[in-house]
Amino acid sequence: MYVRGDLGERLLTEEIGEEIFALAAKIFPICRSITGNGVRQTLREIAAHIALEMHEVPTGTPVFDWTIPREWNIRDAYIKDSDGERVVDFKKSNLHVMSYSTPVHKHLSLAELKQHVHTLPEQPDLIPYRTSYYAEAWGFCMPHRQFENLRDQAYEVFIDASLEDGYLTYGEYLHKGETTDEFLLSAHVCHPSLANDNCSGIALLTHLAKRMAGLRTRYSYRFLFAPGTIGAITWLARNEHISQRIKHGLVISMVGDGGGPTYKKSRRGNAKIDRAMIHSLHHSGLTPTILDFFPYGYDERQYCSPGFNLPVGLFQRSSFGKIPQYHTSADNLDFIRSCHLARSFHLIVEAIDVIENDAVYLNAVPKCEPQLGKYGLYGAVGGNKDAATESMAMLWILNLSDGGHSLLDIAERADLPFTVVRGTAQRLQQHGLLTLIRPDKGTDLDICDFGCSRQ
Image 1 (cartoon, rainbow, N blue to C red):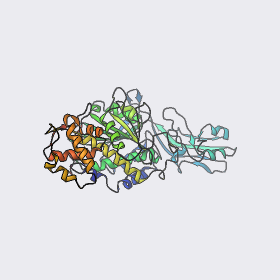
Image 2: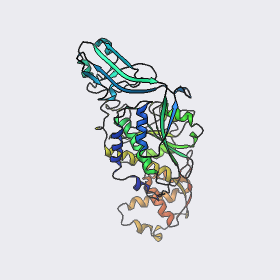
Image 3: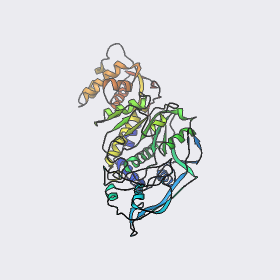
Image 4: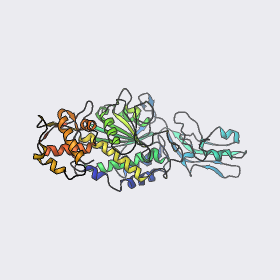
């Protein structure tokens, strides 16, 4: 963002990618699920950076058509062969145990064991990620190549876990702006050691919130860190009375790899956040994929359910389920990069810049083109290598600033970056050729001038 208070320059430091990666690496080993101490530990790591408020919702609490499940915690698990060697060891990878496995300790034949082991025959060297949240079962996950080499003998299986009444835990941080209208930024915190899905999203939003904390903004920004599906449903059930404050929103996941980028539009399809993200990606120099809304994926489908229909899209680099690393042990810290995290951060910041800065101007000299030379405007850009672009931006802005077009409207029509259009409009205003009518409210979303400064 390059705004009156230079928010972009403050947020987009050279170190941002390394800082996001460092937090992702710190939370990577934690065994998370939809409830339990792994979620709490992760939220405590986030709280070391921002003033995170943690909420605990008891087992059995109804949340719309769902009920808060029992809390799951695990301490150890293994499969031992007849020599007492651990052929599968939870302490080496928390992906080795199917999430929410019920406790078990017994001896099984190989044939009996195979009924409880999950593998990926098409990716024989990888451990799959599997869950059984709402049906009591137990299971292990292991590389298929290792599975095929198991000897026909008795095996000891042990899962030291508890599944009992407790709590679902989520965290949120509210950065208060000049208005109570909100921009929601949401990341799921239920996946165990998967770096891209979603240590990357958790870490990115933490550092975005951390940098935004010292800035003045028009919108309020709500950062939500909750278990997937049940967490978002729980937040909506507990906050239905304020949900309509959300005027823009993004679900963030899988932002650490070099694919995409990918943007899935909100259910509305033409919300301001959809236009802002698409505009940011269009001018990114990358090759983005834009998807229409469909009712499957991450928590955007909860926010976009018909009873809420909030303007919330999904931003990722590679799309979920489309890469071989997805939900496998290959989604490790070697798979994500600081440079990709920084670029993802940048793309999100640019969209926020559009949301905060879009405005409607009125041409003060609307009858024919003004003689720009006498205002010193041609001379100001004559030696600039971008003079032609800035000159066209001036002409587009003057022509469309009729009180009915916002800066984003003009940027889209002229196929120019929003930052160029906004900067040019400010220059024209300084020379008395434009009058600011209002921050643009759009058709369904309130937009404002992101007049940011240090508090």
